[in-house]
Length: 154
Image (tube, rainbow, N blue to C red):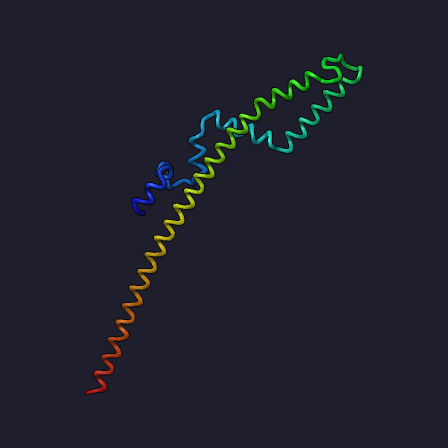
């Protein structure tokens, strides 16, 4: 790899070559980062949407019927407060997870770029070897033809 390519890929050098970049990236995450990624993954799932919908329906149902004491009467101000609080915490957590995803994408792109450079260098080396072999074969053929031509002239 040329010096110019090394300057373009400073972060890749931190990643061990015997592991893939996913494993290396996962090892560098803090507890808070892993927690934020898991929370964002759970909140972005159908299970969460269904569970939250069930909770809302039960909340409203219990507050509209007379079976249970009404702790949050009809415009459901407490439920609105719960959703506002959830949104206030969910938004930054999801943004943190998205930022880490952007970092993972950047590292993946750098890794792909490095793989392409390595493949290109290997192909160039193979091409040079094949050219050398072809040249050697052609030289042998020319030598044999000259020997055949020399033996016929005698």
